[in-house]
Length: 94
Image 1 (tube, rainbow, N blue to C red):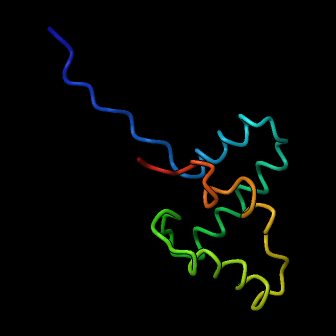
Image 2 (cartoon, one colour; image 1 turned 180 degrees about the horizontal axis):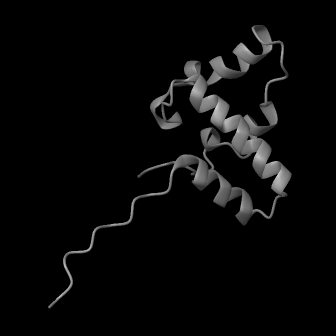
């Protein structure tokens, strides 16, 4: 018998893609955990929407909410450098 038609492997989830990107850059485990944590908070803040489905105003709403409502220091370093939001190709399709 020949094997059935193969189904393509599902693409990795966004946070898994972020982890792989961080590991390719040989960053520390602590950096990976911190960045994944911030991205998880970002995704939950936007009701689990993918960053590719958001506009600039929605993306900027997260650090603004942190600074204004929660009085926390926004993760600007993450948003500027390794984020899937800045063109690092994590989570990008096509």
